[in-house]
Image (cartoon, rainbow, N blue to C red; front, side, top):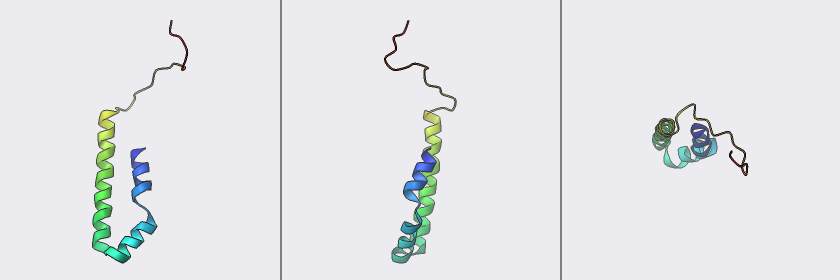
Length: 66
């Protein structure tokens, strides 16, 4: 989920083309690689904090427990 949302927010073709035009290919490539590294690290951190296989309790809101 984090990878999808980060890629959707950070890696857009029109933004990349504007960076290429105004800031040059070196800046565009550096920002792209930095974004890629940060997205991957955030996914790794997310997996550490929210371990795979976690299941929410099976309760309906407002239902009394017996």
